[in-house]
Amino acid sequence: MEKRKKVPSIIEANYMYFILGIMLLTLGGKAQQNNIYSGIFITEYLIILLPIMLYLVVRKYDLKSNLRLNKITLKQCFITILIMIFSYPVAIFFNYIVIVIMNIIGMEIAPSPLPISKTSSQFILGFLMFALSAGICEEVMFRGFIMKSYEKLGKWKAIVISGVLFGVFHFNIQNLFAPIFLGILLGYMVYKTNSIYTSIIGHTMNNSIALILTKIASSPDMPAQTNIDINGTFLIIGLLVIGAFALVSFLVVYSLLGALPETKRVLENVDSINSLSSFKYNSIDSDYLEGKIEKTNTSDKLLAAIPIVITILIYIGSHILVYMYK
Image (cartoon, one colour):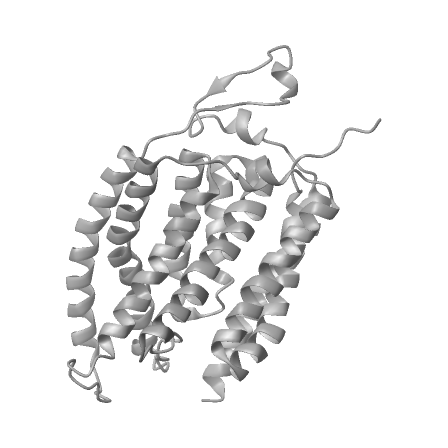
């Protein structure tokens, strides 16, 4: 009987990424224009989560191992929350760099896409859609399906590539570097804890902070915002101040990552050590054992690269068109 493949290929992941990206820009964009809350529900559950889960089930890939549906400890949960709190200033700093560059070259700065919650019920709905739903569905796609497929190239390549793809998938130049940073951070945390629940909690926490800050900024007690022509010097000073704060926060995050308990796990079905019934190893330092690093031929590399290149071209082209016609 033919041996069943346990992990999706990079080609499968890349074409799924491309297809869902097109669906996000078309169906998801239209749905969100009609109603932001129902649009986010459609985007997260019907465009992102449902196709991923159906594909894994139809292709008979094991959900538990591919998505790392493993429990975490209370300590891991608590430290994850702390990491996301202190990583937020770092993410803000990365996005602020883009804003400074856009201001220098004369590009328009778009307002935050997050809706302002005027009532408690709106805030709860916002949390369910923008924080919890995004945390679940997007993590299943990126730290689950995509990162697992890229493990064939090694642990760190899987973490970085899935993080970059996560940033591009937002299709927002102002919100590019922060998701890349957070994607890499969440990917590392998933590897260390061997659980996608870590990144779901982290992603949900990050988006919750954004919702809370948006609500605070829209409070009647806060000074009204006016259209002020901010010069480059002011932006550079702001960049330095935020950068200093982000540096301190990053050092705290680095320390917390070291304190995050690492989960040891049993390695299964590795051909080179199949004589062992079980083998415990370090989840962070074993590229070969975890990812079984593979070399691919040129045609496979080209086939895998096509959907990613097209997606990036769409990303760049859409922003050029927006800039030209504004």
